[in-house]
Every structure is written in C-alpha cells, then in structure tokens.
Image (cartoon, rainbow, N blue to C red):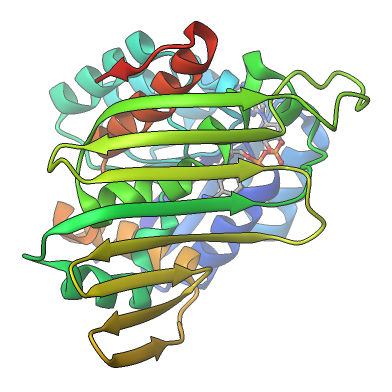
Length: 320
Ligand SMILES: NC(=O)c1ccc[n+]([C@@H]2O[C@H](COP(=O)([O-])OP(=O)(O)OC[C@H]3O[C@@H](n4cnc5c(N)ncnc54)[C@H](O)[C@@H]3O)[C@@H](O)[C@H]2O)c1
C-alpha cells in the first residue's frame, strides 16, 4: 500500500515534534510543508525533503495530500479546515481547535459533511498510564475531580495576547480540562475567577497569570482546576476521587489508591509519537477508532474553556 502523503501547515514548535514522528513512520511521508514565515518553511522542507510553500492555497492546489497537520497558532486557522475537507484530506488539528465557537462549529460541519477523519491534539489521552486510569474508573461513581496546570511563562509572542491565544486555560491548560472530561465525562457548568496579577510588567501581556475554575459534571460530580504561569518549574495533573478510591495523574505517571492498596504506574511511552502513529493508522485503514480525540471532542473541550473565560468576565456561573 502506498505511503500516506502528509502535509503540514504551520511549522513552528509543535510541528517539529510531529514532523519528526511522521518522518520515522514507515507508512507515511512528508510531501509538503507550508508556513507564512519563509525561513521556517524552507528549513522544514530541506530537513524532510518536502516541497516548501508560503501560501496554503498554492500548496493545496499543487499537492495531492492524503493528510494534513494544522499546527498554526489558535488565531490563525482561517478556513484551512474547510478547504482541506473539501478536497477530502484527513486532518490532525492542534489544540485548541479555534477561539470562536461559531467558526469551530462551521468547521465541524464541513468535516462531517466531507466524511474525512479528524484528530485533535489532546495527546495526554494516548498515555499508557491514562489508559490504566480510564480502565480503573470505568463504571465507578466519581465524586470529585481536582486538576492543576502550574507552569512558567511561555515566551512565544502570540501566547500573551488574549485575542490570539485565548489565555492560559484555552491554549494550554485545555489539556487538563480535556483529561478531566476524558476520565469523568461531560462538564455542564463552569464558574471561573482569573486575574493578571504578578506578571503585568511583561510587554504586551493581557492574559491572566492565575486562574481558578469550578466545574459541575453531568454526573453531578464537582471539579476544580488551578492554573498559573508564575512558576519556574512545570507541574500538571488531575486527581479523580470516589468512595474509598482515588486516581492521581501526576505529569505522565498514574497512582491508584484503592482502599488500602496503592499502585504507581510509570509511563513508558512518548504520547506525541503514539498519537501521530495512531493518526496515520487511522488514515491508512480508514478506521476512526485509532483516534482518541476527534474534532467533536476538541469542540466540546473548547466550549468548556471559553465558557470559563465568559464566566470570569461576567462574574457568573455559565451553564453549557
Ligand atoms: N499538543 C501539544 O502538546 C502542543 C504543544 C505546543 C503547541 N501546541 C499547539 O500547536 C499550535 C501551534 O503552537 P506552536 O507552539 O507550534 O506555535 P509556533 O508559534 O511555534 O508555530 C506556529 C507556526 O505557524 C506559522 N503560521 C502562523 N500563521 C500561519 C498561517 N496563516 N499559515 C501558515 N503558517 C502560519 C508561524 O509562522 C509559525 O511558524 C497552537 O495551537 C498550540 O496550542 C500543542
């Protein structure tokens, strides 16, 4: 069977990781790369023997791609998904899938109508340890979910601008909101407090550096997430509590405390690699079951994070 011909749009930080994984995959080849920064496009093209473009429309009109990785910043998606979907190109879209619900819902319609496969970059779902946590929690009643994403400031220029990134929760801690949803189910209400408190002096900064968010799940479980950009190290995780048990996801590792028994599982995988290989397997076999985060899932997680931003602005609980 011929190799899956892959294109990339946006070849900055995260695309470098995906390109490395795709280049290693014997079932795929990087045919074309596109970036509005000519130097980035040229460098990626040379590194992977792919044709480099600075114009997305030109790339689509010349290349016959099977799959496309969309790795542009959140504000820059334009109508890339719609254009690729019309050509029947399968998509891997980085999180967050956008910043505006109406536009993301339009993209979701286009993806459904085209019948293409679409994965979204919620890579924590692909951890071997998260699979163990999910299996343990299956069928159990969850009482409470506690999350944290406490890290340092990201220097990427667009990240600090609310209108370009959506802020830390939408852009970054979205991984933890998604993991909460993966382990504990849908979220139905959100109440948030956010503040730009101690990093005000960073030039151009207008996103909160601290966020505290309360959730209610469809099951009536309650949840909470703390996010901050004020640290020098990086910690992220989720704790899921039930009657006499808890599951702690701490970075990539998982500890299950079940009554008197405590078991820790150390992850042995590279979640980006597993995710990228799963996407190629899905495209190769036309089987969406390889994909653990669909576009619809990315849309649902975006609903929650944007609702939290609204709750903070209005000082009210937002129902979903
Ligand atoms: N899943 C993860 O763990 C993970 C990690 C990092 C970033 N991301 C996500 O990936 C996306 C990109 O982040 P990044 O850190 O790689 O950003 P980046 O700024 O390093 O790279 C983005 C690239 O896109 C290019 N670009 C911007 N607009 C474009 C356009 N219209 N057409 C073509 N190219 C364009 C830029 O020139 C740049 O090279 C973000 O949504 C981010 O949240 C995901």
